[in-house]
Length: 473
Ligand code: BGP
Image (cartoon, rainbow, N blue to C red; front, top):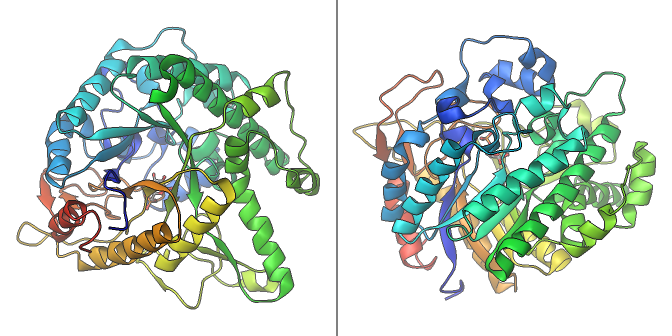
């Protein structure tokens, strides 16, 4: 058997894409609660000022799939598939509605007590992300988001409250979802509204510094509260950046592009800024404002494991002419790889790229890895109470094969949680029609539908994969 017998098979969602109940039991507004779906969402994400000053006709996070009320039914279905782990996030504004309060909202805390109890009832380990694109909106409107160092204090207070509250229920914690997304979608990643005349890289990397310090303070709190019983991980939107050609200039560009992604994990894993940042920051016109104690806290509290999302590899070229055409459909402005097929949303499909990425991450950090997102977003058709999603089974089978090859290559892998194990709202499009789940949810892009759950063909397939610990794909 290639995988360890205690391999953590499961699935992942995020509070803001599943829970709904966006103002229930004292919850405050999150960044995502002012974002519409479809094309308008793209505009709002790239220009948050639009979102802050516009009233749209629908906000997908407001009801999502109503997981806040259906979690017992949904966790039961995940237990039926044999999940060992279930990844979700805590909605920060459920605990601190504005984010800068001194005392937490008890009703918000009580909800997650019930949710984690439900997981434990089936022997399912919760894997909890502290912040998954849903920073309290007030921290943007009042403080400017993560560009403001004050957010370190507010995040540390929030982390201490939940780490203490759930210390007997949650062992696996992630500090920030896709922390490098700050570079690609700064509003999602850092609640940042960047002015035209600002040096965008300066704002983003200073915000990144604040998040890196906050991440270490959360790790410090975890170790003080629960010693070695907590596992704290960082989380990267990963996907090896390939050079478009064997021209040495393309190779050097790929080294630089990979470093820009790895930078966040380098700091959280090694506990210090890598030497290449001197030149990288100088070329970007970035000067990080450090405060007394920052370097010590980073050094003393590195993460225990490296988690990441993988949807595809990426492609870069040193030749600006190459960027005249269309790039692939994801947020990384990657060139289209002529050797790869793409999903209906233009995300290229590269299973072997997962093995490449896993080997490079493990060689670089020599810490356990955890795949916390991987899956295929598709336009599933519900027919006769099910979905014949052979395309999803094919996508996952090919990626799991390469994941197992990477383990045979010597990579230490803790677990695998497929993204969107139940249909939820897409982060990038805000739509329900981009479905990832083994479970179909009867809800459309405008929140209409019965909300009923239906097992897709992949439900029983994944159940068998887990039962055989990856032997039967
Ligand atoms: C990642 C996010 C997830 C998830 C995933 C799929 O960036 O961590 O929240 O949404 O992307 O993206 P999408 O939902 O846009 O298809």
